[in-house]
Image (cartoon, rainbow, N blue to C red; front, side, top):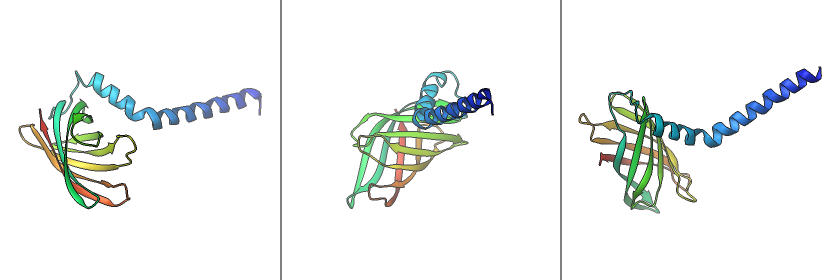
Length: 156
């Protein structure tokens, strides 16, 4: 093979690797940034879930039933929704990535608090007046046991 072909193949492989690294480490952050900027003017769904929501969810920790509360800020672009914890009394700091389909929001959650390693999925039903989202979450706890419980969001 000529040096030109080898250089072209090397450049292609390097570009692919760099693109994959950016997608893995920055993908969610870039999507969230786009939702914050573009979402201000483009909703694109029957429901507008942008803004502040009070989040209340139940879980078990070391065998004890607990309820936690946090304030979350939601951004929306079309049917894509991103939310993150902006305060509250919860020891957890959640980041949500959801899709709206009719009156349902379905997606994933991640606890981004320091030293947390909790991930899962959830589904909410948006009430007809758009002021509440009521649903369930499922995910792994720190012992790799699967937990599931209720999660409710109320517009602030």
